[in-house]
Picture 1 (cartoon, rainbow over the protein chains, first blue to last red):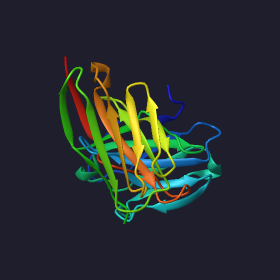
Picture 2 (picture 1 turned 120 degrees about the vertical axis):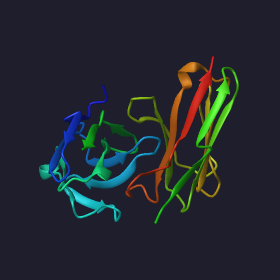
Picture 3 (picture 1 turned 90 degrees about the horizontal axis):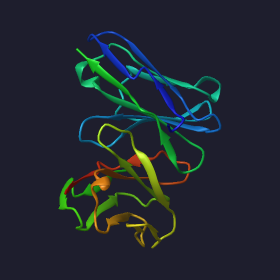
Picture 4 (picture 1 turned 45 degrees about the vertical axis):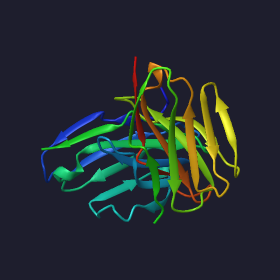
Length: 111
Length: 111
């Protein structure tokens, strides 16, 4: 158990629906990352936060994706109008210094 | 933008043989991190290298950071079946920058 929890673990949604994922980082960690991973690929950077400030969002990410981290604690990632290409594992990680601790991920399937 | 590459993509070795994966960044890195992901699992931090030319060892694993801080390698001596998984390198241009992952090297060990 790494201490980072993600909810839900699995999500199946119909194309066009909105989905929201939650990440609870390790409590003292100030940095929080969202990554997306598909089979056989490395984690693809989506966005990251330093406390409540969103420092960067991937330029590859469409406007359908948005993330928040109110009060610098938990974070949510919302995908609007889901497409089949959004099917992937969405990983959250938190860190205090260098070492990033990953959650178990949310597996999204868009049908 | 910053890109991190790894070779080989896959490596199949007989148990007891050595294994090496190489990581190259398109930009100079502040630090390099290595992670291991077991099948069905999430990435787990192995080590961080910070200094130019640094070499660190963890039992049968040897990690190197290149002099120019743009490349790194992970060498496993006498592989065991417990070494099976995908090894990712990751890094950022500064200690405050986002962490970008390479595509990983998937290691299979034949008993």
